[in-house]
Length: 90
Image (cartoon, rainbow, N blue to C red; front, side, top):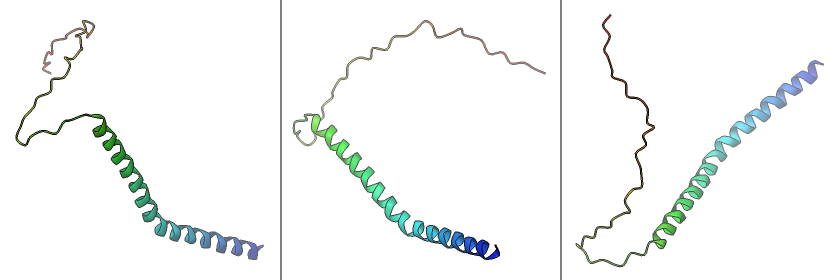
């Protein structure tokens, strides 16, 4: 019985040490790989946005203004009741 307990403890600590060591070695590699994938995804999204916008080449120093559509926000009357702030002295 004591031999089984010692054997279990040995394997438990050996496997936990092995997992700890492997994570220290593999974590930086996996994080770099993950960061590269995210960076690549953002780069592709950025390129898609700029390919969809037809911008003719402009002369250096020329300024152009593009007007956006007026906002269609309407003010709602159901905002709530206004309550004056009253300072209370104790």
